[in-house]
Image (tube, rainbow, N blue to C red; front, side, top):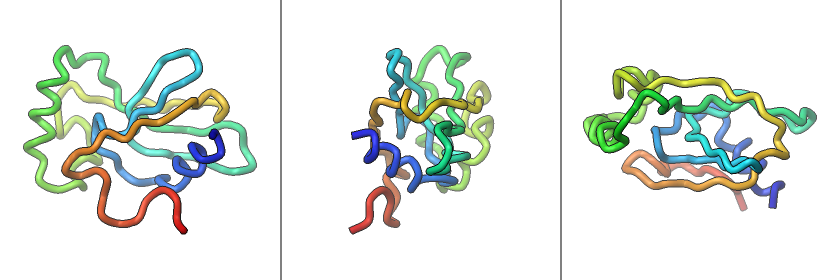
Length: 119
């Protein structure tokens, strides 16, 4: 299972992902929404994943409304432009700590071009 999860994350490396669309869950039960996969190397046990920092956002409904005003996916590159309290952080984590991923669909996710596994 982890091999599939790891391959999927590697294949979305450097893509800008809209807020609330890709959520990773860790062994300890915590979860984070992914902004970018910054570093993923098959020969390294650690990944660096840029995550959205939602700690200052009291109501996710506000964030969803702000997201609905976005007209182009490229606007997601700067979280503060989406919502004044939306920020990001870098999560440096052993790959084995990642248990599973949920893709929450949005008008900008998944994108039309091929992502994930290729046949």
